[in-house]
Amino acid sequence: MNLETTLQLLQTNVLPLVLRLFGAVIIWMIGRRLINMVAGIASKALGRQDFDATLIRYFTSILAGVLTIFLILGVVEFLGIPTTSFAALAAGAGLAIGAAWSGMLANFAAGIFIIIMRPYKVGDHVAGGGVDGFVKEIGLFTTTFDTIDNVQTIVGNARLFGENIYNYSSNAYRLCMIEFQLAHGEDFRAKIDSLKKELAAIPNVLPGSPIVLDIDRFTVWGPVLLAKIHVHADHFLKVKAAATDAIQRVFGDMGLAGQRPDREGLD
Image (cartoon, rainbow, N blue to C red; front, side, top):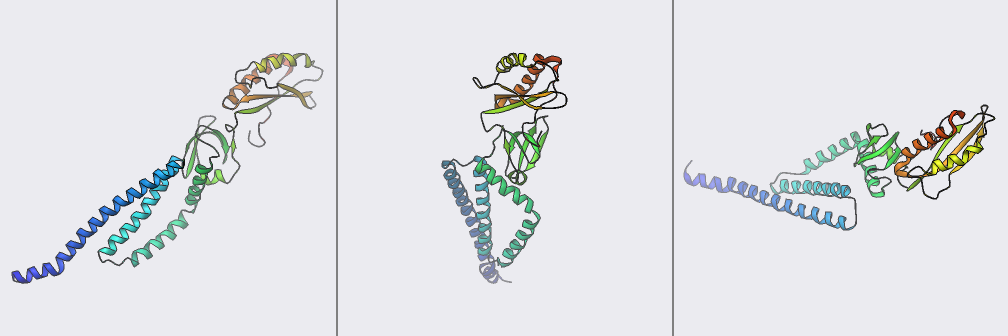
């Protein structure tokens, strides 16, 4: 093979391939820059609409991923490689992944709605999905709780969003109800005023709110009294414990049978 033949071979076969590779690199670099610009513009636009930062981050990531797939297909097409087989393979893979990850996709969709609708936020005391605790982290697939006894629990968003959600931190104040069993024949009415003063003096009880002490029902042992106190939501458990101590202190050996559940089926 002489020099002229070699040059002709290079010009006919190698040079077009090099030019295509060089063009593909240029297209890739320009395309990536444009994708980053589009993602940045979308992020700023959503930020001006007060969208949640987590939702903005995931939306822009998905947008950038989809555009990158189109860019890869464009580069492959520019290099002269048929993309039909790639498209069929991607469609098949998408169906397989969708079937295998149906639960994950349900959690993802529920996470989007939770972030947009905000039924709870980080730090709230929430019961739902079989868990009662304080929200530590909200993700697109799961929500992380620290339970009352400080156990980290992770729940799928689909389970939370598909059931009732009790947000005890949503309202500034809650009604704390405590019931206690008394014996027959005890003169409890003389001690009610003293107990009301004790309960009203507990920190984080709503100032000026009525302290209610009523007979709730009668049992074979005697009357059951029910105390109702409006307390600050952030200090509910502390106030409930202090109120229980006050009742025991005032009524002494007249008996304390137990506490009334704050919500049916959850205590």
